[in-house]
Amino acid sequence: MFSFIRRTATEVAESSAKALRMEGLQGWRKELPMVQLNTKADLDQWAIGSDKDIGGFSTASLDITPEGTGRFHGNISLELPADRNIEQSGYAAIRSKARETSMFGTPCWDTSLFRYLALRVRGDQRKYFVNIQTDSVIQTDLYQHRLFLRTPGQWETVLIPFRDFVLTNNGMIQEDEVEMFREKVKTVGLSLTDRKEGPFSIEIDWIKAMNTEFTEGDMDRIPPTKQEDSHTMQ
View 1 (cartoon, rainbow, N blue to C red):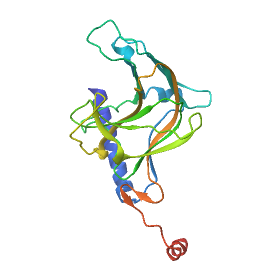
View 2 (view 1 turned 90 degrees about the horizontal axis):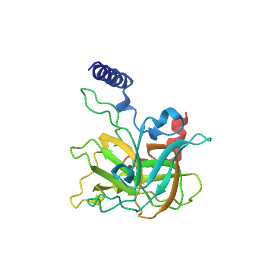
View 3 (view 1 turned 90 degrees about the vertical axis):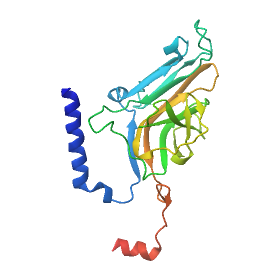
View 4 (view 1 turned 180 degrees about the horizontal axis):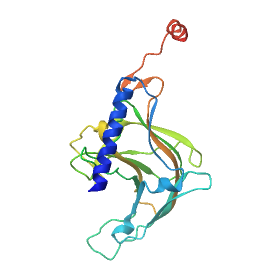
């Protein structure tokens, strides 16, 4: 109970500080840092799962490399456990942990003023998915998008438009598509469900909500003219 009250007091203090800074009136922002994986302390903010949790044989680990980035790695097995009620196996996933609840609810990221979810990653040839969970009534709903890597084995920043994520539930695309509640993004993560046995490895530096210089959420920004630029510089 005491910790709940303390979290509520912290939430009030942070909200008041934002109001005093008038953050809502600051206008265009390039990025909103969400999660990172650079230190061992960061590992505590992430949850790991695989089919091993239901009796399967896949393995998954999350650790920090000597270079100071997170590494999600393991081995996918399609072998089924003895439980006949389990018909599929072969998956692994990580996600950021939801922040602790106060009387104001679960703290979430407001990504509505940004167009892209940006990930700084270095992956292999496997087919990963990016997952977003919002603060919705149905906790098993996930918004998903394939993580397309242009240069496997090299670091790259991947930008995925929030509007391109698809609503899924237990891995199935939902016919009744509901627009993402972007003001209440609760967790982000990666999953591997390509149904291919063998090792996998992907490194993660950070995940952010982001604009480019030409975007402001789903709106396009008009580049300033040279005259406007010179006026701004004065």
